[in-house]
Image 1 (tube, helix red, strand yellow):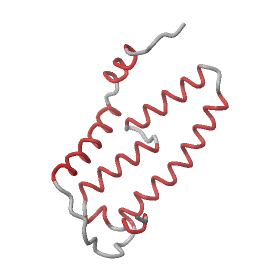
Image 2 (cartoon, rainbow, N blue to C red):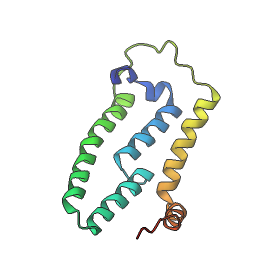
Image 3 (cartoon, rainbow, N blue to C red):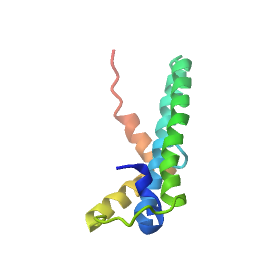
Length: 127
């Protein structure tokens, strides 16, 4: 599938377009999503471990990635529809999965404390 084929789908399928937008923003590390929390923790741990160069490369790669993720969001909402989707029918389970992914991505991004506490408890201490 080409990204250009998604033109106008944000309006044709508003719920699924919104869910995809949330997930793409999370992949880019945009607050208040879980992807932001994850990238922040990775870069903070890299800096604390003395790997400043590696953290800077990661931040640069994230900025490059954001360009590609936002391009899809731009196409969803700002480009006209090329053709009417022929076989784009989404059943209840597919919608449920999309809503669940977006809700968890936003929910854990806004209130990450329980997830972070759980992650801290599961750390394995190696000699």
